[in-house]
Length: 390
Image (cartoon, rainbow, N blue to C red):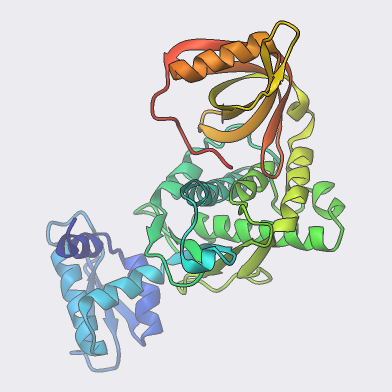
């Protein structure tokens, strides 16, 4: 899509609830509506200095009328129509920044897998926060498949990257449905970004003050919305370097007041991730120690031991697929000679395996213990869902 098409699509998506806060911030005030079709805004008592904002997007000339509104605003403010349109959309979005801070990241690069893990962790952190808004009493969502949460994440956008440490910028529209209004109760999107920052800030403070019980023994407290899913998303973003950190910050949409008592930035140091893994395990509850079957890919065979028959056995590295949303977790497992031979064959033939055991998450590499079964499937590897966390 070229720049002109992008601009026209942006004009077409404009709605009165998006325009009103911006217009009021620029000194325009709403007057009477015209026949329920046009909202009239005036900047002074001069009846000629007014804007006629279309109300109904289903009208054929809606985009054309919105274009005239933008042109009038641009003329009044002495800048381009595209600049006005950009500010209109930014005013309706909470902008999140996920940054890896390290000597290597300061050069603006990361290893490919780590960069993809950062992106996937960011997506899952938003999805976890959105699920918590919908079901605040839960400390773990086995499947983060709530439709409103998925719809919200689908409407979030990656913005252009910024200079400095390596990071990604995600814009979260306050409105992701035509009939959603910014009046009254908070929009769902703001509740999600609010929950995300409150949870992460509370988690870091609790670890630093050695008061983890404050968030793990009362997980349903209204001021703290923390789930194992969010902890896992943070772990996925963990940098490789021991002297690195992940910084999360937000620029709140100006269309709404800033949340009270919520930080707009928090830094997750490398030394915090092992504790975050412990919190995740605690919040998952007893189900975390139950044996289960996992579809996996064999990434590497690391066994260096030989039994008395000269058969190799030992550690293999796996990419384990979890849940209906296809989260992928890197894990190790110790296999006996028979299972190790099956893993070797699946690896060489590019086939999936199914492993039965207990998955124990950790800050960097999970472990599958109590392996009771290991079978190669007949299905060859396709484009593998998700990206392993290294």
